[in-house]
Image 1 (cartoon, rainbow, N blue to C red):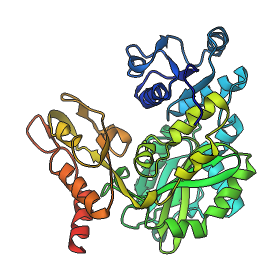
Image 2 (image 1 turned 90 degrees about the vertical axis):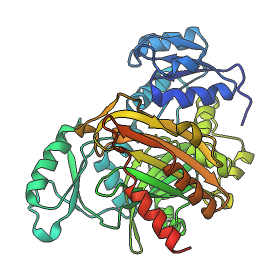
Image 3 (image 1 turned 45 degrees about the vertical axis):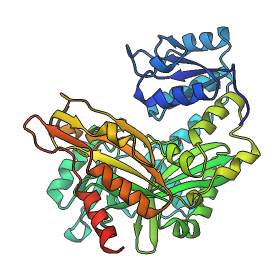
Image 4 (image 1 turned 30 degrees about the vertical axis):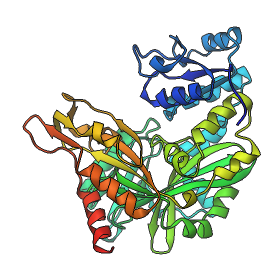
Length: 425
């Protein structure tokens, strides 16, 4: 990477979603200014300056950029400010990794499914919104075309549930449009696939096996690299590259979400951004590549990285094993938390992020969304055995109880995976 010391970066958003952007930019030697209207937001505490202005106030931001010699604009994984970043950079003539047209094409699930179909990327079979479904068509999954954080997504097993799910998806969709797809019942396994694009060349950064919560839709644990990496490369990689070249995507990052079923891998969603799951922390700890660092570098220089930096990208993580362990909660008010201090001292723990404190309450609307998660811990080890040992130690160390002393963390999915691993050793 080029030396960026002394360059100035404007970060849009003063929430938790931009904290890691600010921290990493500071580590890269940048002078960081945070903007946004959230009072006493989390990001400003780590920045050099805080400029209190609405991130949609383009005239004021453009004047600030010009008067203060801002070299680049960046934001976190929040979609609201990604759009603002794209618009501001275009107006200011600053580098930005995606155009508004590319964003719109990929962000809308309907547009993305059509793009996949056009270029031969296998997609989940779907139904029309007005189709009359019979018993053999169920189960299906209903989702808004433009939702995020798993909001408005529901699995339906009959017509009555479908009617309710359609309404919930519509309520969660700003565009008031929904999708209905066949629900792939494969034991709760999905894939997350990260790509880095540099000067028109595509590199798979990593692919993970993501296991969702039993009976739910949110992640319980993700393992890297995926057992299906080679299968995806054989069946989908060429078509994925062709698809993104068709929209002129030459520099940046993106992630895909897919479902395996036998020898098929169906791609059903994507993000033209680095993920909120902070996978870059795991790739940096294993292969040595950090896609968020590359995006910040691009925002300042218009270049993702130096040619030698590409050698750090390895979808197989240089032979190492990694995981992101989530801690979903049951309904209730948190009465006590224990063990977090011990977790961060364990071998291989790369990052621990927790989202709730004692006194916070998990309510029904949080269920099956990212707001159900108490914490996420990332681990990287040299072998699968070492990885599973650390993950199980974390599971047996952390404790979250409600005000009546009942356990709140739902470990069912991880416990089943660990038991299967232990039985087959």
